[in-house]
Image (cartoon, rainbow, N blue to C red; front, top):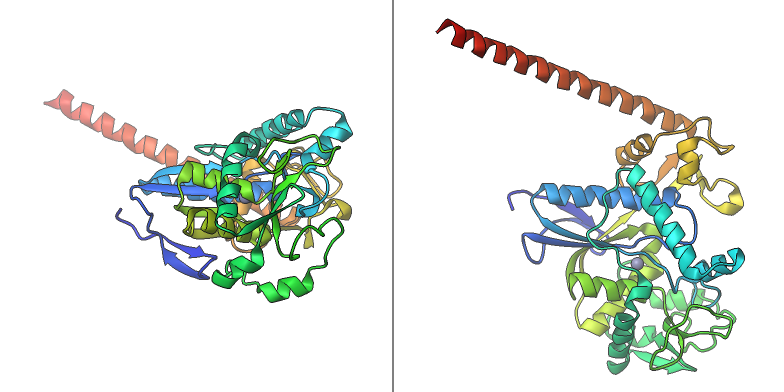
Length: 373
Ligand SMILES: [Zn+2]
């Protein structure tokens, strides 16, 4: 391919020339949403960032397979290995079936991504549809001796892994620091080491989302689904893995370790991470009262918003900043983006009408010539 695309690789911490494993194909996996609530800016930024990467790779002539998953099971509260499943909790609150929650918020996510002009990925796999692949992967890790079973749950042995591999190479963390900084939380006594993470959890009686496995009736650990679905659709090795910086640790670090042991090789060539979003200089959060969702941005219906902002203003604003920098949303900045976009669009309209006028003139001249001859 006749181009030089360089991308910043989080793993090596430098810009590298993009060379896919199997030209002209390019494979990209991006961590998608856990569908238990309405999409907000934290969903829009990775979607828009990697939409641009997807479009640009296609523009360069690559045959791109873009996989972005839907997490519909195994993502527990506070991203921990203990506690309630985010989707099951919502289902209980609303007295519906967990898959109703999943369907409803997946549809909402699609709707708002379409408004933001984000293309659908080539494949959008769901974690619950890939339990078999996840069980197979756990078995491979157990067979290789890097996981252990306690009371029907299976944990990845981080300390053993770290003896021969470098756990923390993506995030730059060191295992010793992780161990000394991690408290042994209640309910985690099953782990040999606080840094270990769950590959499979035995379901407690009240846990409604559960599947049979060789170890127990239970559910997969959150990190496992991306390793399993990435392997399933892009192969044991593929080009790009993307996601938000908040997923760097532990999610992506665990993915690296699982895939390395299960498949015997490093899965990902280039790791890309988009930075976080703040609102009026503050981190977004429900407790801070500044969690504005996309629908509220589009209809202006939130005390923090002075007006409604069109989806294209939001997209334009996000793309004006570098994806690796933090981005602060404020009314002022959004109004400036709105103005900038209006100017850009009117310049484009002018260009279009000029082009049309020139074409018309050419046509008139050539018919004039023909009439004369
Ligand atoms: Zn993921």
